Length: 290
Image (cartoon, rainbow, N blue to C red):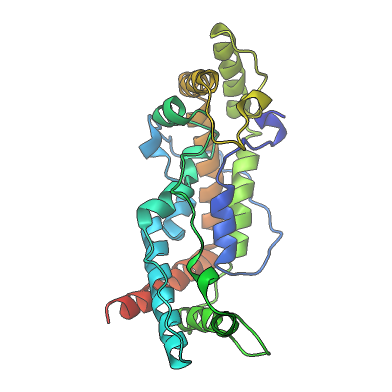
């Protein structure tokens, strides 16, 4: 499928949408309205410029590390009260950022350096060893998780951080985040830029109808760790063509315009999202500063 058909390139910001849902909220089916005719010109010349309006309301990697550390500390305290000693590892904001590429892959692979090193693959993460809770005794695991109708220490710690926080609909934000990306893909400026991208790729000897098709090429074997030289060359050409054709800039501009309209139309929802996050960060800071 092509962007004009509302398709989404592989490796986009879906992970962040899932993370937002995990922060809790209720579903909503209200669609993002079309952008107003007059929108500010968005200048996009590199990856650092891909900052969307919704980003101001989402937890950063640093925020997520702070929340995770506070949760771990409260969890450990709870377990000690029940006679168990646990040591969850500290959260690493850098690792969190690596596992969630965010806007850097929202419009497909767009970072030239990433394409040169990893092709269409995600950057490799540290080898995953056994999770700390997998090593616990059955009795400790029973106390850690919900059981026998009583909240376990995992839930208790979460409740302590969220306690008293203003209600916020994170699921709704995740839905709007996804919709703005897909609806932006249907804008004429984006479909026209896609045609320029295709012509650019053909000049490089690569025939793909859309950026999605380039990512989905079965030769790349994205489920495997190995990255071929051909994949790197194709991803590098793809990325260069995305920028030279104006596809990244056009898609981002349309995406940002849609998000600004949603924010203007729903000030109370966004105020609650911001208040909810601030409350939880404040409580997390109080825990980690003890």
